[in-house]
Length: 613
Ligand SMILES: Nc1ncnc2c1ncn2[C@@H]1O[C@H](COP(=O)(O)OP(=O)(O)OP(=O)(O)O)[C@@H](O)[C@H]1O
Ligand SMILES: O=c1[nH]c(=O)c2[nH+]cn([C@@H]3O[C@H](COP(=O)(O)O)[C@@H](O)[C@H]3O)c2[nH]1
Ligand SMILES: NC(=O)CC[C@H](N)C(=O)O
Ligand SMILES: [Mg+2]
Image 1: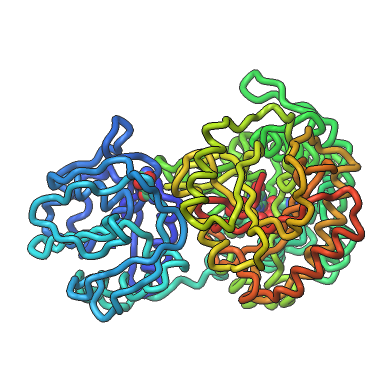
Image 2: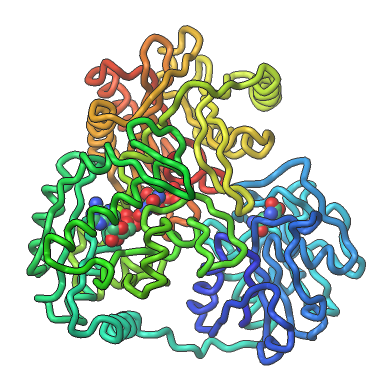
């Protein structure tokens, strides 16, 4: 199978899913000359951040669609097919981000064997307005075209993403395409990941010393375990950095656990002062110190650079020349995709810079000094490898904690953003049409999102039901519906203690400093201790500078996902008990006098991301 990359967040997920069905696949840029694709039995065109109707449309060779090979276009790929064959694609009146119910035609070979009603993951702003001649509509979500096909040409397009877990019939649809439409057989043997990783490490760093950055998370635990297997353990130096943005007691616990992993050399760097006080230069611009920053990308870049400065210092204390020394980190595929790394895709947008893919890291990679054993894997694959390596289950299944730590859970703000009265009126009008019992308002705090494979940095909306108990389906519908209807909101949070809302909301400045970090750390510990249960994949607290009589509110973020590329919040009353959430709310009100509102994030990814930044 040839997968043509149009810059989608999930291009690599397509490749993975195809391989999991035991079909070999290769990824090429969308502009690849069609002659190079002749040997393949099928072509998949990925999604992507561009739009086919404007000058940013990606270049492709039209002969690609004349090869006589079956083609499946996904999202941008479907829009490309429709336009190519004479149909029309325009910006949609209604966008679709998140889980969406569609009705499929089981008569279309792609949907063979499926029930008509299906839930799928959408992430698009553009839409088919005129179907290309010769094509038929094979699925709809209301008035939006959700799939098209040309029976004679064997060309198919889906507006949704069959490759991600949130598309319930995704595997069945891909199986139909690969096996029934392309006539492939599942005969491909998955590679022995551990063996390949060990070989690669030996090729690079055989008898040399390697510094490995260990956070306590599963990714770096796997990196360290692979290094210990591949090299003389005496040459592996593990460095754990406490940047002052770790969770409660985390560095102590992590270092205890790491000692038990068989590491001969473990160095703990207490570097909070470096992270809080350093100033960096990026492209001639001075950034920092962290305690003055409000821009989420500046925070991420600064933290990433300081990480490497601290590693350099550690190398020097070991009498190593840092510019000649190998160092390893547990980078995963999504870190690189979301950072817009050009080695992963030439067309993908930067959603946000991961700390492990900032400029200084990219330069070291070019010199061949960085070892990234997990480079090609998603989170669930790393967990599988961890178990196969015999890593303790508590680490193999550990919830992720981002490298920049609590810094990306603090909604730093200089209180200069404003919501216009037109924007507020638009929200009120939409909510009145949805259900007058729910009050929703936009607040001038921006969070990061991923919409149609593009980055968004839009306002948060707060919602609550007047005089009614929380009804999850309604609340989740607001979380999905509102970002689809306005282009200035990408995240919705439900107010769990709505009785506090007895005056106008105020937004205040908020910066990272030891006190604000301590407050968030304590809140986070409380939230995690209460909600860290299955089926939640990750849970944490976010600190917001908004309130009625007090300066702060807290948001509870839960996410259910496998690969962390898409996910949905845990449903209150279904995935988690109402009573547990109510108890947690009461505890926060009782024990945290600085906190006004207790919020619950009801947005999936997309349109929001897991972290708020
Ligand atoms: N506090 C830290 N000290 C040393 N290295 C770190 C620290 N935080 C992150 N890193 C490095 O950055 C890499 C990427 O961080 P990331 O959080 O994605 O991975 P992880 O912490 O190993 O696993 P998880 O994502 O499950 O938390 C880590 O694998 C590790 O190599
Ligand atoms: O190592 C990391 N460095 C980062 O900069 C970073 N940002 C987000 N995350 C984690 O990645 C997963 C997906 O999160 P997002 O939807 O916010 O991208 C979630 O599990 C996040 O916690 C990070 N991990
Ligand atoms: N995910 C995608 O492929 C999105 C395609 C296009 N950018 C849109 O918003 O419709
Ligand atoms: Mg981590």
